[in-house]
Amino acid sequence: MDSVIFLMLRRMRAPLIVLIAIYAISMLGLALIPGADANGRPAPPMSFFHAFYFVSYTATTIGFGEIPNAFSDAQRMWTVLCIYLTVVGWTYSIVTLLGLLQDKGFQAAFAKIRFARSVRRLGEPFYLICGCGETGTLIGSALDRIGTRFVVLELSEHRVQELDLLEWRADAPALAGDAREPELLKLAGLLHPKCRGVLAVTSNEEANLAVAIAVRLLRPDVPVLARARSDSVNANMASFGTDHIINPFRRFADQLALAVRAPDVFRLEQLLTGIPDEPAPEPHRPPRGDWIVCGYGRFGHAIVAALDSEAQPVTLITPEPLTLPDRRCITGVGTEAEPLVAAGVRTAVGIVAGTDNDVNNLSIAVTARELNPSIFVVMRQNHASNSALFDAFVGDFALVPSRLIAQECIATLTTPLLSEFLGRVRLQENHWAAEVIAQLESVCPGQVPDIRGITLNITEARAAYLHLMADAPLVLADAMRDNTDRDTRLPLVPLMLRRGQALILLPPAHTRLEAGDALLIAGPRTALTRLQLSLQNANAFDYVLHGRSAPGGWIWRARAALKARPR
Image (tube, rainbow, N blue to C red):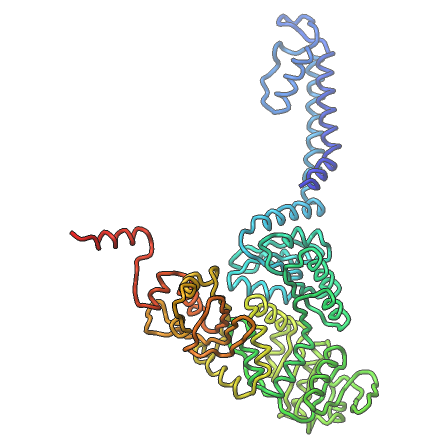
């Protein structure tokens, strides 16, 4: 606010001085020029008070006329001159004010004040998203869909203006500014008591690193999720204790290796980390055998390392001549048939189009599919805006970094238990994952299920917690009864139960619950909402447990008591 006032005073100083000088000279002239009495004879000039009075009502265009007496000709000439001078003065002031309102610095200062006020007024938990390009927008849309508030800090002013056009249900305070500035992070709510986490997902690794460091130093209790592509930045973030570092290249390479080794385990992971209510991802089953990788940058290195870990032979196609021990390297881009044939595309089982150019990747995929129609094609899509082109070519597996990062951020933020569960899932056999997928598809056919973590404590499950603290028994099957018809079980899949340090995967229905247990459950959103209501509300909990339907509000309880009174 101080900066706005200071800017206004500085820019309006000259026009105000000019106006004051014009009115002062006008009053001085009227106080010096002789007047005329009622009979037209010369009279003394106006007093300073009468001159001030006349100038005041003239300036406000009220126009009482020539009072207290008719003016002399000299006074009228002076008045005409003063009127034109004030018109010039006011024009100068108005033009200067309009210029101030259009000044970029003034608009930025005013926008910053409004943004800070909006953030201060947030009364519910929110996340701070630094960078709102493709990834940030996907994260914001997902958070908005599940009813979670967020604040945006984005470098591009044009992008911030575009956010106003998005059909988000809740207004998201957004400010154009560099997230590397600690003062802007504080302005965006980093020190706000309702801030639940920070997502550093800009396209600039150095900016993400700066945000991660600032959060660790200013608000160490707030978790931070950061995007990193290079190993050096990744290591630097890890040294500062960044909670979650998401390297999309390495993450996708790990997924490809997992899909080669255990395709159902990979599909289960995709289902659980997908954006809820979206169509379920198609199953991917990369074959084992000879692979070709086009492009050997950071993405190519990660893919080759992942395929090496699964003992899959890899041939590289790189633009520059490359000699690597125990590795077959072909010079070229891969968009033409010659280097692909030289790399053995006719007999290879899979090819990875992994350059940093979307057009080249599509060209590689099309050429390879023409030479070998059965080859498994993995494509790197650098920009989500090219989805129409990639959708037109039916590839087998595509990496969209922005989407992968958004999915992982949402899964980590909304359900912290999910990370622990996925860590256990990757150690399971393929058939185990296939059984879990079948259960999920039975409750959410064709859709990504919603995942929620519920802890049986006084905050998240008050009714169940009080019941358990009274040493009353509660089994999982009873907790999962429908609160609209207790004879029906909610279509939910309990994925994991955490009790202290112990983790129980797929807890059976007869599992006896204890206070403090944390449940990870998947299913449709409506069923999860009913489960939370049953565990939280005493009346709903009493109904699902005992079949009693007690009145809820005090009016209905009073009415029930009145009816029960003996007559």
